[in-house]
Length: 130
Image (cartoon, rainbow, N blue to C red; front, side, top):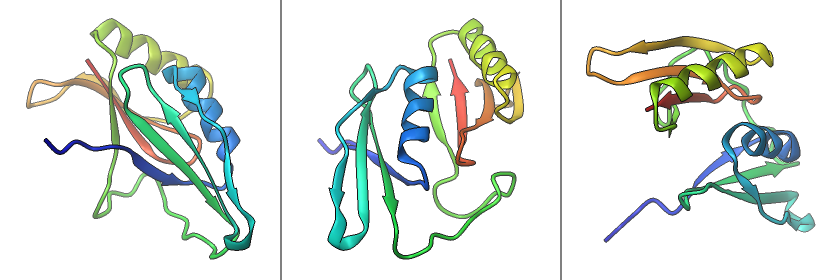
C-alpha cells in the first residue's frame, strides 16, 4: 500500500528550521548529509508518529523567494494534527508570542475542521488541526 515517505523543503538555514520543528512540534533531528561537490546538504526530521520532513539546502542554484501570504499552485501547506482544540489554541498562542505569523484562526472551518494557519521561519504555511 503506498504511503507518503517524506516531504522535502528547501531552506537557506537547515539548523534554524530544524530547531523550529524540534522546539514546537517535537521532531527528532537526524544527522546532516553533505555533498560538497554538488553544494547540497540535507537532514531528516522525524516526528513521533513516524512522519518525516527532509530539510535541504543548496549553494547552487539560487532558490526563488516567495511570499507566504500568497496562495500558489502546488504544495500550499503542511497540516499537523495536535489532538485537541485546546492544543491548537495553545500552540497557536505560543507561536504568536514567539513572533511567528498567524494567518488565520484558530477557528472552525465550513467543512468542520478546527484549525489555525501559522507561518514557519521560512514562510511555509502550517495548518494546525485537531
